[in-house]
Image (cartoon, rainbow, N blue to C red; front, side, top):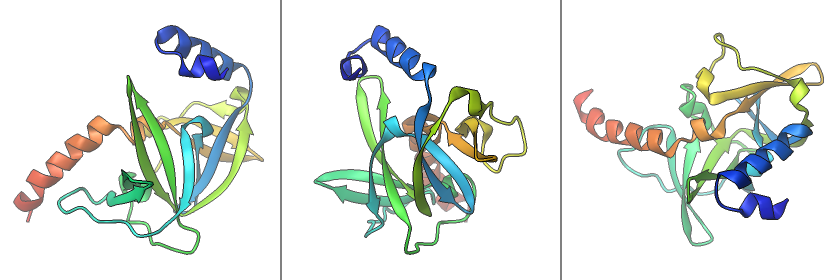
Length: 183
């Protein structure tokens, strides 16, 4: 399976997603503002303790700053803020989950700030409901599904939408031009 994942082109992607769709998929679960969220484990590169984040001036509030991860500059997104809530208060269990996004031939590492990492769960496709059309506290396009785990729902994030590099770049530019005009 490792060869299929690394093979380039659409055929490799189709084989990979077909293999994933047949059985349960693994998700990393975490809490954010009292809610339980999940991301596909295939997107998770590592989990690190929240440390010093270098703030970048004139960026949207949901971009907490950047960290140095073994010599690489990695942006850190405050998910609570990205979802339209207030900034995450740093506590003892606050972590940064390093997510690897693949867009075409490019790979981006982005850190997401979460209240606490919970566990890795297997959720079968039969236990995943479609995202709600309304009533969620976050944008519905950010949700890929609602996983049923022990009688409760876990919000499965569509991480490519939440961390869309293009959308974040647009919002950053709007923040730079809009920040002085709105004062």
